[in-house]
Amino acid sequence: MNLDHDSPVHRLAPEVKIAATVAVTIAIVATPREAFWAFGVYALIVAVLAGIARIPAGWLARRSLVEVPFVLLAVLLPFAGAGERIEWWGLHLSVDGLYGGFNLLVKGTLGVLVALILAGTTSTRDIIAGLDRLRCPAVLTQIATFMLRYLDVLIDEARRMRIARLARGDDPRFLWQLRGFATGVGALFLRAFERGERVYLAMLSRGYTGALPHRPDAGAGVAQWATVATVPLVTAAIAVTATIVT
Image (cartoon, rainbow, N blue to C red; front, side, top):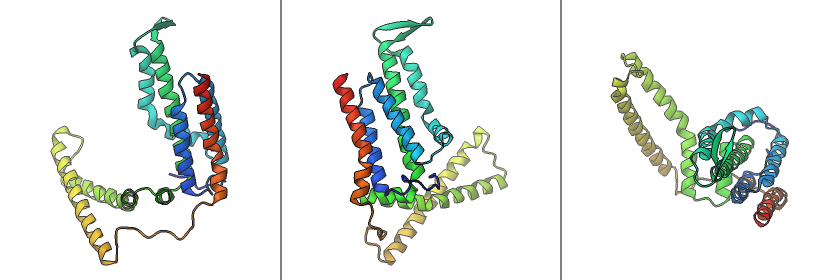
C-alpha cells in the first residue's frame, strides 16, 4: 500500500513514524470539539506532512472512503440528538448533535489521514519491524508477520477452490447454494490450520525458540527522534491550549 517515493518521511525509521502517529492521533482525539480553530491547524499540519511525503491528494481521498459509514453517522446525529434545537433551512437540528457530528467527522477524518500518511510512507514489513523495536508483544508481531507471509497463499487456495466449485456446476449467485459456500469456507479454514501446524513443526526443526530473528539495522538515532518529536509536541501544545481556552 505504501508509495514508492523518496522523501524525508520515507527515509525515517518506522518506529519513529509509528510513535509520532499514535501521539498525534491522541492529541487530536483529546482536543475539545468546540475548538474549531485547533482542527484547522491540525488539517494544515496534515497537509504539510502529506506534501513533504509527496503523497498525492487523490491517493489520500480514495483511501479515505473507508470512513464513509462514520460520515453517514455524523450526518444523522444532528437529526437524532436530544436537547436544545435550532432551525436551519426548515430543518430542526439538535445543537448537541451538531457538535457530536462535527466531532466524529473531523477527528475521524484527521485520524484516517494521519494513518494513511504512515501507510503511504512505510511498508508493511517495516511497520512490523518498528512495532518490534517499540517492544510490542512478540506474539502480536509474529502473528502479523505470518499473516502477511501466508495471506497470498490462502487467497490463492480460495481461488482454486472457487474454480473447482464452478467447474462442478456450482453458482454462488443463488441463495440456496449458500450451504456449499459455507462448506468451502470451513474446508479452507481446516487447510489453513493444517498448513500452520506443518509450518510450525518445520520451524521447530530449524531451531525456532519462540522469537523471530531481528534484522541487523540499528533503527532510529537520537537525531531522528528529536526531529520527528516536533510534530507530536506541536499537536500536544495545540490540544492543551484548546482545552484551556475552551
